[in-house]
Image (cartoon, rainbow, N blue to C red; front, side, top):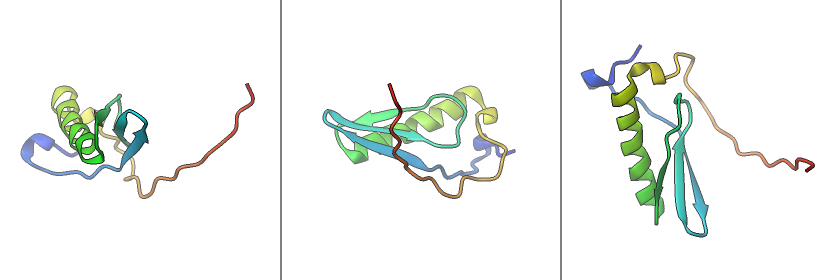
Amino acid sequence: MLDFRQGMARQFKIIVEKHSDGYVAYPLGLKGVVVGEGDSYEEALADVKSAIQFHIETFGDEVLHDDSPLLEAFIAEATIPA
């Protein structure tokens, strides 16, 4: 298991969504809810990176998935009947 307190780095895939009132960003492959936001893409990305670091420091390495790393992420659209 990786220990971030020992200075080891880990990469995350981050989804950044553009909304009419700003940007929202969240990581994939992390247990728990971590969200960043901002008025720009860069602000949302910086905010979520800070939130990821805080989340890991607060809850420890157990929030990291032990499975194989996420290689790719896809966005799909689906229509669900109401």
